[in-house]
Image (cartoon, rainbow, N blue to C red):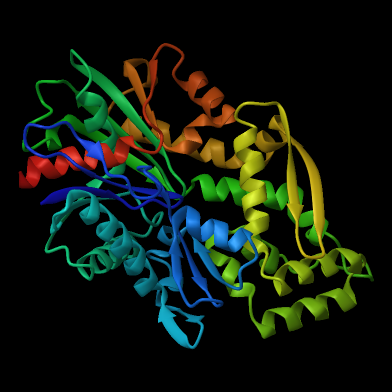
Length: 416
C-alpha cells in the first residue's frame, strides 16, 4: 500500500491514489483530512495528544508541554537537542517521528490495511543557502519516517505535488508557476502541465526551474507578534539609564512557534528578572515574566495567528490574549500587517523573479499561477503577485490539501 505524506509546518495530510480510483485525503482527525502539526504531552494524565485535541488540551489550561511547527527544526541545531517530558528526556527528532507515526496509524485504521510505501513532500529548500544543512534536513525527515515502519520512501518537491493535483483537472497544456506558501517555507516551480503528461513516469523535463526561501506562515506570525504584541512585553524599550534596548533574543523566541519551549526553564526566568531590574518599563517585563511562568507562549502566538487570519477577510482585527495574569486587546489593521511583512514579501518577490530567470523566462511568459498554502490568502502577498503577473490566470487550489493529493498521485505513479 502506498500513500503521499504532506508533513507540514502548520498542518499535515496523508492521501492515497489507488489504481482506478481518484486520489483522496484520508480522515486524520474528527473526520477531517487535515490535522494541525501539534503535540501536547499532558502532565496530568500522562497521555499524548495530537492535532486539534492537543490544541484544546493546551488552551484549556491542562498542565503539560505543547509543541507545534515541528517541521521548522529540521536542518537546524534544535534537532540535536532534547526536551524534558515528565520524567523522560526525548530528542526532538524522536518527537517528529511520534507525530508521523500517529498519522500513519490513523490512516491505516481508515484503510484497514498497512502502509509501507510513501512519497513524502519536501520544500525546495529546508534551509536557505546551505545545501549541506538542506540534505541533512531531508535525511532527518527520512529517518523519522522510516522509524515508523515505512520501508520504501521517496521525496517530491511540494510545489510539484501541487502542480500534479492541478494538472489532473485541466484540458490543455499550460506554462504555470506554482506558488506554495506554507507554514515554514515559500516554494516556486515553473512547470509545463498538461493532462497527457500526468501519468508520465519521468517529469523532470517539464520542470523548467525551481526555487524557494525559508519564509512562511509561522514567520509572518512572528513578524506580526514582534510588531504589535512583543512591545507590550518590553520589546524595543530601553534600560532605565536610557543607554541600550532590552535584549531582543527572548522576545524573538517567544514570538517563534518552534522556539517558545526554550524559555520554559529556571535560567530563562532568572535572566528576565535581571532584565526587569534594569528596565525603564518594568511593568512590561512583568508581563513577559508572567507569560513565561505560566507557559502561555503558544497561547499568545495563537492569538497573533488568529488576528493574522482574520485580516484575510476584514480590514481590522484584534490580538486578543487572556492569560493567567496578562490580558492584551491590541487592534491591528491590514496595513500594519503589510508593513510588518514588507521585507519578507519583497524577498518572496525577488525569489520568484530569480526562479523565472533560471528558466529563461519573464513574468509575461507565465499563463497560470497555481496557488497553494494558507499564506497565499494574505492580501498584501496577493497584491504583490498581481503586480508581478498582471496578465496571468490565478488558480487557487485547496490551500491545505492540494500538496497531499499530488503526493498521493505521485506515489501511485512511482509504486502503483
